[in-house]
Image (cartoon, rainbow, N blue to C red; front, side):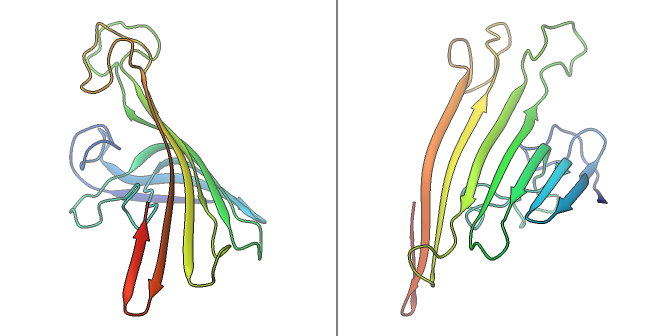
Amino acid sequence: ARIVPQSTGSWNVGGSSLTDASFNMHEGLIQIAGDGFRLDAGRFEMVYGDHFIIGNVGWNETGRSFDGMRLHIAPEASGYWVDLFTSWIAEGAVDGTPKPFGAGDRVFSGIYAGLGHLIADDMDLDAYALSLVQPRTPDIAVPGINGDTGYLFTLGLRSKRRIGIFDARAE
């Protein structure tokens, strides 16, 4: 187990913005690892698909981090890995007024698998299922997710391969 604190100085709720949440910690997590697995709980960066799918926005002074839990499974010598994660990217009860449990919250979850070199040694292949969920709270306006539309969901594949002097990518 290890604890990883990193600090910065801005005010916001992490995940959907490029500033860190109210206690000004960019990364602060507890990590428990064993043979073929690692569990992260706290605030951490996520980078998937060379930052095209999910990224920490490394070019920004602060970057992006997520509050949640992530289980990384990578059986030894298997050539693949799978991450299961859930994170809160918006807290709906920040103004202090009484609200139903979960009102205004947005939860970003997913499964992301690096399937390694299953097709060719010089090819990356990733598969993912991602969801963004907000409990139905019509009294709280959130752009893009409101009223009856309380979730967004996507499935995807991403591949990358070097062909001669070219990098070929498809998603």
